[in-house]
Length: 95
Image (cartoon, rainbow, N blue to C red; front, side, top):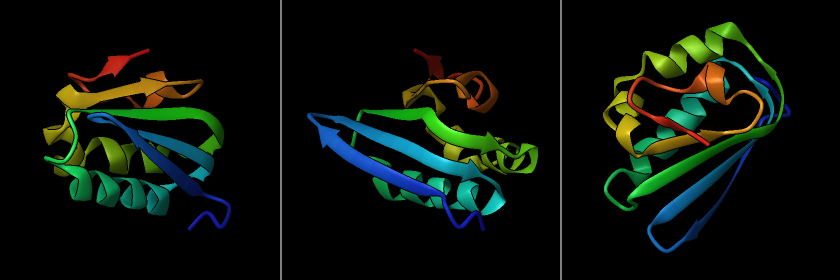
């Protein structure tokens, strides 16, 4: 696990904002997937902000993109920041 990886979250209205910080690897992907599972049904839109990531491991991206839990939510996900293109799922939005 990337020891410097953190997810900061805040909610406003029906939106959840997840700010990813540090190095994104396979363990980080699982951490993000678990948060998405927990929030399923509690919010309408989820914004995943990647501008504070230091690096993006291809394996972490693959784990995240192949997650059925994340893909079920793809129409409610919006990715922002430097790594948004790499992380985005089919059916999600970019901002």
